[in-house]
Image (cartoon, rainbow over all chains, first blue to last red; front, side, top):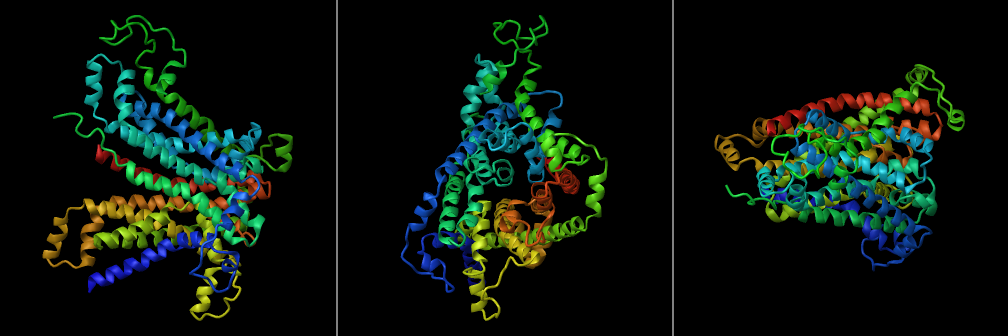
Length: 270
Length: 327
């Protein structure tokens, strides 16, 4: 009896939690007369017309390109810079190490949403508004602390003995890093870059203040304006929402599978 | 990548004899004294953070002491006004309304997220394998939804003309939901934002709690059950103490996240109607970008930051304590 009750609750909750996602996707495949109706339609033959409306919008591919460029740029920059910093924090002894750890931790919680106005003023003074470079740099700095923090964990998880034995065999520190640690960091780099990807892909507040001009906008900014531009075309709006969501869903699936590392487990025999 | 960073800045020539033992016989290719290496590795990160984040924080404080409106924006002049912005903000009724609103909004969200998240986490733990997978998949789907698409979906669900919410209300037999405008008041708008934030945040708490629960040894449960403890008793006397760090850290994280929430509230209804759904971050944005009162906006943002810092200091203390215990 308890089992039935539990399963029933779980079923209802599953339906509730997935519902908005289902409603977004199903609306995007309905014809206009099935979307704009007082009595919602639950069974229908799917149509792709909203997807051609959404992707046919002027500048659509510019927004896609902008989003991809900014996101990938920020993630790669963050990985490069964070790799160096997190190696120092995880492996090297130096004065101010603990302070650095705390600073990174605090920077991770930086309330960027509250700083948008001053970031706008700074970018304006530097004449860097409506620029993809500015947005890339901001997203890079936004994801940097988290990237350092997680990579630090991954580097620390590589047994010190591996590095030491490489150095005994004649590698210097740099070679030991490049040949021993770096190859083992695959899952870590993957996981952190995917998180950085999601954060940058979804970001809204910064692009709202920084890149007002349409040809420098990203997908989230476009999506919020889609409704103002198209009024009640909810079918196309939901198609656009679905398109923005798909890459994130794919990344989530990748994270589930690949982020579970453990490559170096067993590399050092006791 | 690291190679570049190690080699790029020209280091001072090494002083002979300053090297550590064992390094003397190496070929003189590595010129960086080893004591400097950590700092060189950290330099790009520190520089980036200082130039963007540090500068923004500092200038935010400076601007809050300046008269900074449209005129100053165009003429690019600096006019110091001391505490005038703070005085104006603190005497502004709208600020206090917004402050109270932010607190209630935050409290409602965090309580709902923590209670529902905990219940769902316990449910996940109690379920069989198949049902657990079903529930976990729909939780992950809700969690994965990007902010702006999910806000857009909620606007569609609560659309005045064709929204599903009005249909549900009508079907349940409520009158007056033919063309009900869910965004007609600040209260109603924030209720919908609450629904949205709770929906996306509960999975985080539930899945993490479940992950934590799987590490609790099954023997503890069995022992408690043998001793005749009720489910409630097991939760409060066993689970709560074991999972205490998790609950504390997650609660403070949610407090910080909800308090500074911007995208959901602004994209939902731009702080409207008539600025009635403005929380502090949204108010700072509207004062700045909407009214061109950058000084005022900076003062609001500094005050918000101070409130956030209180919550953060608790959070950091918890995290540092855990770090210490782990190492």
